[in-house]
Structures are given as structure tokens and as C-alpha cells.
Image (tube, rainbow, N blue to C red; front, top):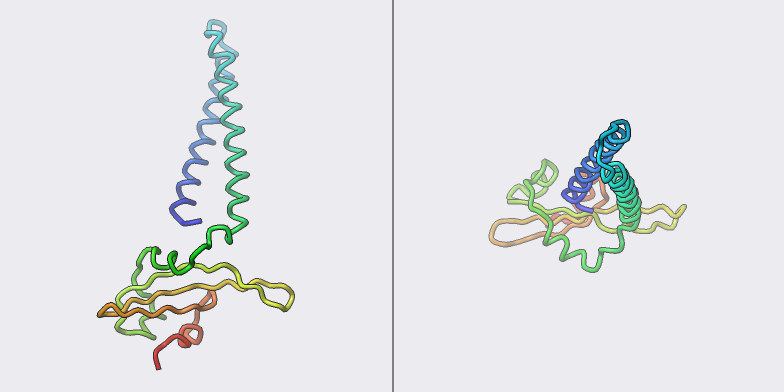
Length: 153
């Protein structure tokens, strides 16, 4: 899941929690008030319960979607090309001083035989002047040695 999606989901979730608490307070107030309209007494608690159930379903689905990152990996290269461009950090600048920008995505985990561990990897696309590009796959915490393998000789 992308950062934007996670931020939007968190905003919707927090907004839903605030509205559920407000609906619960308003429902309690309508039951304590004698001259409240009967529609408010029955409809408002029902809508608050529906909102609470919808938030629980959202939390359940988001958690399930976060567990299976391999579902959306039809073409990692297309995902890398569509990733947002970012300024080069110090590691990339040390290896390719003329790099203009870079793009980065996290690849699906690679199974490792020992103890069935999964190794996380990143794919980097380093954009250079004149339209040249370099694609490097490195461990998720890249050091100089990991990126140096893809450096031109």
C-alpha cells in the first residue's frame, strides 16, 4: 500500500471514530431528553451502530490487505517506472555524482532457504543526464556495497 493510501485510510478511520463517538453522545442525549422526536431516538443509535460496524469492517479489510503484498505485483518494472521521483540521497550521490533523480519501490519478499526467512529488497531506478538510467536491486537497508554492484565499472 502506498503512503497516500495509508494516510487517507488513517484520516477516514480517525474521522469515523470521531463521528461514532459524537453519534453515541447524541444518541445518549436524545434518550435522556423527554421531548426528543422518536425518529432521533431510534434512527440515530441505529446509524451509530452501523458506522461502528463499518469501521470494524474497514479495519479488518485494511489489515488483511496489508498482509498480502504479492497480490499487486504483476509487473515490478512498471511499478518502478510509475514511482514518484525523489531527490538523490547521499549514498546515491556518492556512487553516481551525476544522477539527476531516483525512484524506489519495495519488491516482494524473496524466500531464503535458511530458517525460511524472507529477505526484503528495494529496486532503485537512478536517472542520469541524457536519458540514461540505471536499475539496481539491493537489500531493503542499502549500504554502499549493496548499491556498488550496479555501479558502472
